[in-house]
Amino acid sequence: MPSKFSDWELWENAPAFTEASLKETLLGGQAFRWVQKEDFFEGRWATQVVRLRLVEEALYLASCESDARAALDQYFARATDFAGMTDALPWRSDPIMKTAVEAFNGLRILRQPLGETLFCFLCSSTKQIPQIKAICEAVASDMGPKLSDGSHALPDWLTIADAGEARLRTAKLGYRARYIHATACFLAEHPEWLMQIESAPTEQARERLLELPGVGRKIADCVLLFGAGRMDAFPIDTWVEKILTRAYGLEGWNLPQLQTFARTHFGPNAGYAQQYLFAAARAGYIPA
DNA sequence: GCACAGGTAGATT
DNA sequence: AATCTACCTGTG
Image 1 (tube, rainbow, N blue to C red):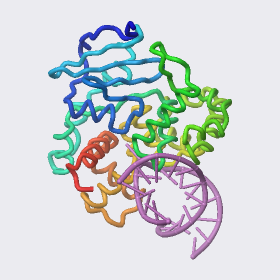
Image 2 (cartoon, chains in turn green, yellow, red; image 1 turned 90 degrees about the horizontal axis):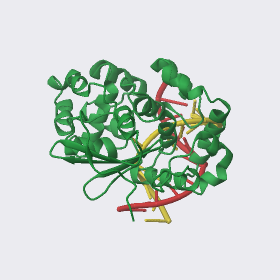
Image 3 (cartoon, rainbow, N blue to C red; image 1 turned 135 degrees about the vertical axis):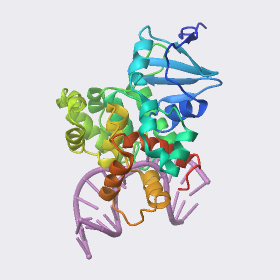
Image 4 (cartoon, rainbow, N blue to C red; image 1 turned 90 degrees about the vertical axis):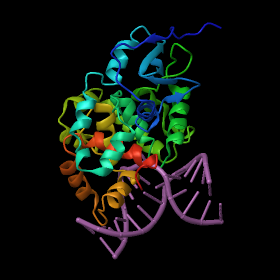
């Protein structure tokens, strides 16, 4: 059976990854539609189906669509200077930050489609990454449009709205189904809404996102960071809260106080710092 | 059986 | 304004 994928080709001017930073970028909880195969990663977003393979610091790609290269540039935010942003983080004075940056140097923040990012993180509350991925896969298989390799994309909001809450519950969404369906109904009625979020300043965009059912501060910040390129958005989940309270010694601080600390200590790219810290804590480099 | 998992919203103190 | 609690489901 002929493969739908193109032959492997070198991705010229690709982002500089290490094995650890590539794996963490794709599988570390920013995105939920990447899987690791024998010697490559396979991922889906929008209408794309892409394979990536790191061979001695060179990145090779195989894809199903002719516009994969341009889509990859966008998805990986290739124009964004992550090396420069890393250098600007306070690793020189902060040994915790230094540990995280050294372990995952080259880590990137993906620029995922905003709507898909919102959907995935609405699925994420009190779920672990493997479960979130399973839910996304189930919803895509059930109601997402077919991709050229026979797999499925995530459905759009109108499709989710029409499907109804009960249909979503068959994907094991549980109580999240009500939030997702209500959000879908709102977005189906307001097709320009997500685009306005993309162009609004971070503070305003966050306020708007918080109006959606099921979206609190943590999910709003994940959507802004991973789906809108807002490096100042600093999601505080249970991991990050533990890192801040224990490793940084901020016991007793409440969430708004921790947000203020993050902004002042990590600077304008605090969200990027958060992803380094999150990765390092999960890998055991930082006691959490 | 029971606690807990990359939360949120509504009620209660 | 800080602190419970219900909400689904899977995992250990």
